[in-house]
Length: 374
Image 1 (cartoon, rainbow, N blue to C red):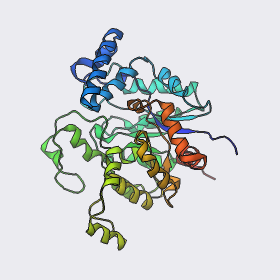
Image 2: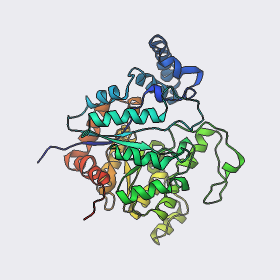
Image 3: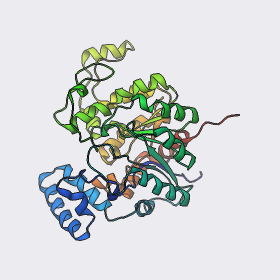
Image 4: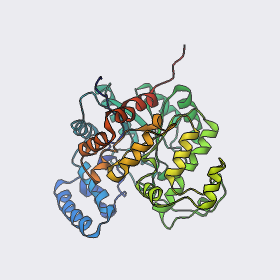
């Protein structure tokens, strides 16, 4: 049997210089760029994270570690050290220019141009994904430009303050659908979120008309991120290849394992109907994956919780799902829990070579394949 060519479809290599100045409190973004301050703050954060068990401190630590590498290429080379030489990497850019957290030292367009240089140097190993934000002027012109320069897909991050069904994205979706270019989108309740003011008109869902809730911006961002929003995208673009990153996230996986279907939902499912209420985002995502031929999900970061590996194993051996699950680590965010190598070996060892090949080679190749004309 030939060796597996691993595709880590979900990684990040943006640096602290791409992060808006107000993303972290107390001027930490600026201070992390100074080595002496960074070391002092890291010791304090380790102390706080240990004694408070607050993962917010751990997340800040991740950015601190990233600050040690001043370029995207250095982060990439560090990640490459954990994998075989022929591994392929999906590099997901982040457009944080519109999240209302101030300016970054290097804005998104600079991040993209740096990625172009990386693509030229590591042509076979990397597949850059261009972040698309409907608020960015001349978005489609930029899409065409960077696709021509070798970008292999697009990245959505709705909790930064927009819905994935925003009509300003339609031109990009139509292009991606026609070309076979994939879209990877953040789909878990946590992560980076929009920092602007929540206005009264935002409290109504633009499609359902339902009143939206959220005690703060972090909670309200879940409304942007909810997997049900993609049903409106597929209504217009049924052949668009979409990957729901993180598969709903650890919080929703815990709900899936711990909660049972309400009796009325059981009756609806027995009748072949869509339940009125889902027990978790994961249960909804699984139904959506069975419904939509081009909907995928990746296991990035979620699989760092080893108690979920058995769930992934079962899903990989479920009809209509086996061809839809992708390997991804979420480097460098996975450093919150363990090293990149520990993550990858845990997943591979538990899945076994047959299922790991399906998830880390066969499925990503189909997801990334461009359309061809005869």
